[in-house]
Structure formats: structure tokens, C-alpha cells
Image (tube, rainbow, N blue to C red; front, side, top):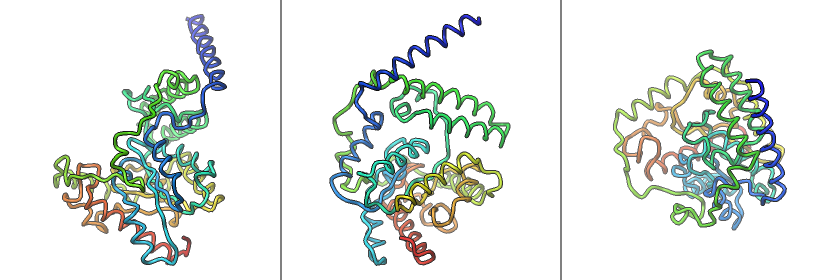
Length: 337
């Protein structure tokens, strides 16, 4: 048995060495697994913007930059010009990767002074997505160590999370190995054609739904969501995961160093105790939440949703205007654009 493990380790080391060597010859493409984001960047580079959005389809399909700019620019003494860089199926850790890369690339971040980033729970990888190029492409050692530390503190915070945390470490071990060895990249055919959705995406990166409802959204769906939100929205900060918190605060600090105000945006979504313990610990000037059912009761009308996760055009307008109003209120209190 010992010899078997030694052989497996030696073979893995050989594959890793070959993969790392391949990096010297493969073209540098930091977004090879997210064709949609890659194409959005191409549009983004065609003009100049001072405000950007990052996140999942909730933001891509539910935040209209033109509505935000119109609301803010009518009331502010400066002008906002916003581009929506959110993409489908983009979870928290991928969003961190994309925004970090955006900050480091001055050809992208130069001139930007406000970034709105969707705040999401840190989640593991579903088994069926373990070898997906969109899962693999952004894995590196820094991200792997982050997930290991995060999982360790999750186990300390709640022993019931030990099985899921062990699975998470194993899942990210596999995906990181696949990326470091370039096995997934060299076996993935680069798609150079525009994603089908891009044809209907606006010049500001927003893709609204044409229909009012795609899946019937009932009062039961909304009640389930609002009950969850009321349960967790005011979670105390005494038991937050310090690895998660430090990651968020690190992004805020690096943004400040580049003259960018980073605001974590919390849309209506199912909350957890862990994510809200971190969110509520973030400085007030770095968060905007449009989630409280008592403050935004109109948003939770079934007529504003196309399915139980996404807004239709009516909901998008209400949500975007609410974010704009909170942003303007923040300007009055701290004077920071």
C-alpha cells in the first residue's frame, strides 16, 4: 500500500511538472474558462467608464447601468458612467478572482473610482461541475490556500460543517491540480465566437429579460425567501469566519490604494448566518443592501420576478433605483463619491 501511494505521488508530481512547463508555451489567457466575461471586457475597453459592477446573473440580468446613472447623475454634482461586468454562474470566489485581476490590470481599472460587487456566500463546488472549465480556470495556489483556511475555520465555527468542509478541500484540491497542470486548458477548445447572449446585451453590459415571467413565481416562493432573509439579515458579527472577512477587507484596502471605492452589494438572495456575520462587519461605507423585506416590500411582489432567483424588467428598475438612492444617501453622510 505504501508503494502504491509513493507511485501515485510520483506520477502526480510528473504530471504537475509537465503542466507547469506547458505554461511557458501556452498563451496567457486569464479568462479562458469564462468566455462571457472575456467578451464583456472587449466591449468595456471600447469606451471609458468610472463605475463597474461584478457578480452573478442576479446582477447581469437585474441591474441596469443606464437606470443607475440616470438616477445618480440627476442628483449628484459629478457624473457616473457604469458598465456591468457580471456574468452567469459566477460565484463569490470567482468574483474575487475577476475583481482582483481587474484591479491589477491598470488598463482596465484606470479611471474607475467606484466598484459595486455582489456579496455572496462562499460555497463549494457541485460534483457535476468539478471539471468544468468555468470552475477550473481561476484556481491557483493562493485561492486553494484561501479555501483550505476558510474550510478549517468553518469546521471550528460549526462542527456540523466538518463533512462539507472536508469535501470542499478535496474538491478544490482536484480543480487546482487540473489548472496547475493545464490539463483542462489544453483539452478545452477555445471558443472565439461571441456568446449567444451577447447579441442582446446592451452597450453597458446589461441583459434584461424580455418576458415578464419565465417561471411562475408564487406568494409561497416570495414568503420562503423573505422568511429566510428576516431570520439572518441581522446576524451578529461575533462569530464570523476571519478568513472570509480578511479576504473582503483586503479587496477594500487594495481598492482604496487605487482610488476606487469598493461597495459590496447585497441583492435579495437566500442568506446564511456565516455570510451575514461577515457582511455586517464590513464598514458601512463599503456596503449597500437592498434586501430587507420591510424596507423594500414592493420589491417582493411576485410581479417583479421572472423566476424565484431573477428580477424581470420591473424588478430590475426598482432594484437599480433602490441601489442608486442608497448610494446617494451615503454621499450625504460621508461625502465619498
